[in-house]
Amino acid sequence: MWSPDPENLHSFANKGNTRAEGTVVDVCTFDENDRKLTIEEGCSMIYVTRAMFRALGGKSGADSMVIDNWDLAQLKY
Image (tube, rainbow, N blue to C red; front, side, top):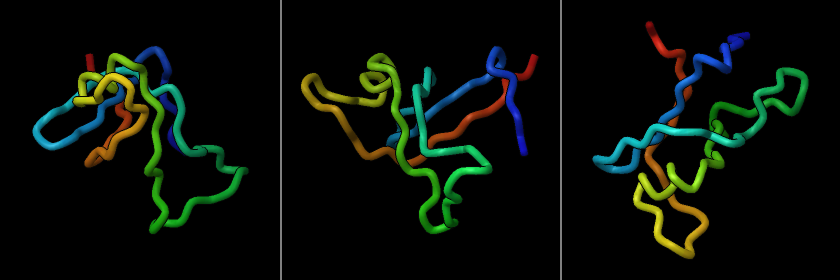
């Protein structure tokens, strides 16, 4: 199982032509011992900081939006 270094973790989300980088606060489970997600289910829900939400075009008073995709990656130095 991939175990990222949290000090070197980069997260981003894409919505249309907008790419926002920031902090993903929580996601569906990555715990290998917990309930397994099927390929069809994927990991489609993330919780982000307000700054990242606004960078993706989130409106004041809204608490959710549909994005195209998101991912986590190790930063390269």
